[in-house]
Length: 285
Ligand SMILES: [Zn+2]
Image (cartoon, rainbow, N blue to C red; front, side, top):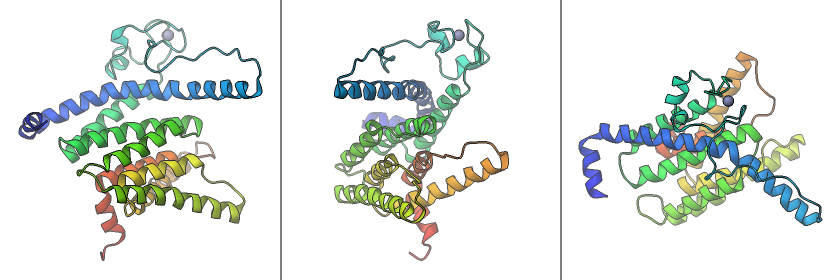
């Protein structure tokens, strides 16, 4: 580790280039997870339900995340290797499928580019070392959670609980917070939103959030500790208001807005700038 670290300390621009390229490749993989995980979960739920009710179950297995090659969703042609280069293929193909000329969703290169850009920014902010590696795992999981929540209004337990376990795990090492802080953060994260949810329901009779959001904030708490949860909720509210304002101006969009993406933004920004945000909220401390 120390030799590699020496090289990156001497040539920080090399670290940024590596971070950007790794980000592009990971972003390409995240697209696959975002696309294939929800149908896979739905298939499993239906199969379990059929098992439980002893009904007949005939649905075919949806494509898995790791092993199957990419196909065009419209013409089903298998993509060649050069159609799969992140962002670049989209530009070379001018946003159209090589076989059927149907448009490729802009979201694929967008997620790839966003992942690369944010990974680069993490490298710039944290430098080479364990906090950067941990932070990248946090970032990549939050990107998947954000897009699956936008698509399906669900935050899969497989993702939020993995994030929670990772937060607890990293607290065992001295580059992160202490295990006490991590456990307190997870408990407080879950309970605070749980409380807001039930108070809101008691007063208005409506459900403003879901249990997935509680688990996501519990995960955030395990990474950040109890104090920074205030920064997370502050940043989540600000980004939520900003997007709501934008939506009102464009006058487009649905009535139902998932909360997960804003929580994700709050968690990520607090991982990088938590203490600074607390300083802005409570300037006297
Ligand atoms: Zn096609």
